[in-house]
Image (cartoon, one colour):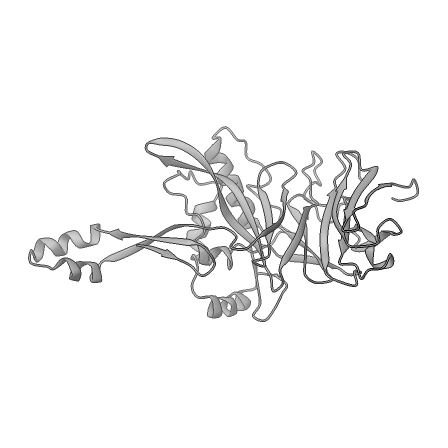
Length: 343
């Protein structure tokens, strides 16, 4: 059976004939229609994706996965998944997580966490941002920061092991203790919260049953030898309920809806990532300003104004972080140079 979901996904169910074999032996006159009614149907992985325009995307700095935002009010996580087709092993990009389900149309996203060789690379108290963290913007005045939960990191590590069995066990296989297992979205809320048992029950009351914790754990346990046939990827219902990322911080300062984002990640040293953002301008120079953020400190560290007279639509840091290019609806392209006193 194939069904088309409201959110644009295609759902598949396969009849489990094994449970019918014994019954058919006992009753040879069973009608085919009656067999279908009493048959057991098993849900298969869905074909999922955005059902409105994709507004922005960002690669994980290590290239392990891709994050996309859309006007369908979701942020989705895509990874390469190994599967067997006609007896051959192939890799396909599939949606394996839905970090953010929002109440506003999403507009922009930027990754701000980078892998480091230091022991404190996944320490939230370190000066640099830990790996697997991103900032997103929507049709609201707030920037939101998200961290990957432990369950998502284990799933990503399992998928990587299936693609390349020689992959060594990394920090993703055994996430740091400070990372939550998963997040939930409270009813009538916009901020993903860290999992609390009573709140999960509240979430399930409205969203319906999802993958049992023990099944999800078996599928992503890095210590277990999981084959491509045994791997249980999240279903459409689970993507928006059990694969959320917890929101860790909000950045306030814009006077109107956020339009675009970009980030600069220092390749070495202790420099914290720098995020640039713009919002919808009100036909004046002041509202067409670009804000620079130190996400670790949770504050704006600079405002670039005077270059544009209308909404800034794109932003891009140079590779060394010394320059920031911006373009806007006023048909201007501006090049901004980092001042020596800006830390």
